Image (tube, rainbow, N blue to C red; front, side, top):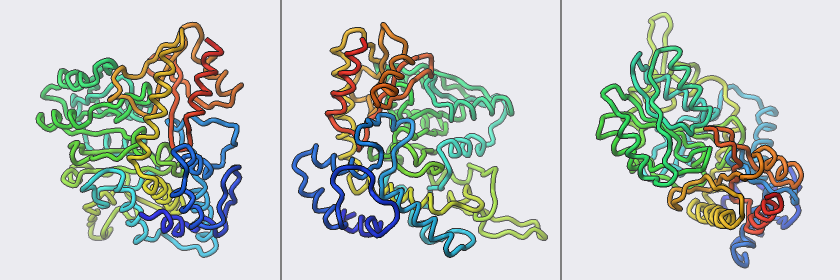
Length: 427
């Protein structure tokens, strides 16, 4: 999409919230688009992107893996749409625009992803629960996952154990040989294995798992394959079809920079009939007749949507998707990974630092996790976040007791040098 057309479509400068971020504030969409095109070097380009976010200029935000900062365009869209809907209240949501939102978001998931394969959810957690509960698993059925999963997957898995007696089989991710994770999963497969479900990128060390290779062994064994994409969507262009992924759940509020309580669920078209919605309501169905006992659900992923929706949040998600797609997902990936590698290499030079993220660059992501050998992780995180206004995240998961640093579009290389200097100061 042309940047100028994109910004005009948002009505970025036509009312709503005002910019509070110091820096380049442009009077019109054409000026903003022109400024990006004329940026002098990469730093200038990314600074102009940074100016679209409202958090303070002296605050360094390195926790997108926890929650993303929404750009001004998203905040304005949510506010303006909410005010419009309250000014002229209407029941339901605009069905035509609802499908346009899915069409826009399908661009994140690669060639061949169709809007009919996407459901708009309130979080990755909801999508994960739709998958796990909708497969109607039976006692003794096995699910393979990793020991580095987020609570959003762990708790629903354990809930199935309590409710139905399923069996969870767990592998410890190999951080030195990323491809070996394929072998670790293969070694756990039995005749009772029904599903492989793990993160695309782990929330613990930022390890990118080889989804295409895992998808291949899953389907060679006639096993369903699901992926938690909360740490991946918005950081790179994916190809769910080529990776043979059946189900993919993600959220809008992390790397996609959208509003909280938004998410996306991808269900491969030929798997839609076998995934059953357990929560349904208005909009889940094509038709129903209580007296005749008849119900026809949508044959698309829309069957997983139900009830009154907050349309303004999903308009905000669409705006966030357009914002990132306009910058370019490949460009975002290169930018984020460059900062992550700068940080990774810098950590290696600091005494008493243990880097926990993968040893192989191809399996690293936009998140790098480390710990200090001579200080506790809580002390380290509190020093950075509390004293130095450098927001990071503690990682107690999997017993790592470490600190995670995330890099996204609003970060620049001078911020990487700043955090490295502060780590040197406390080692």
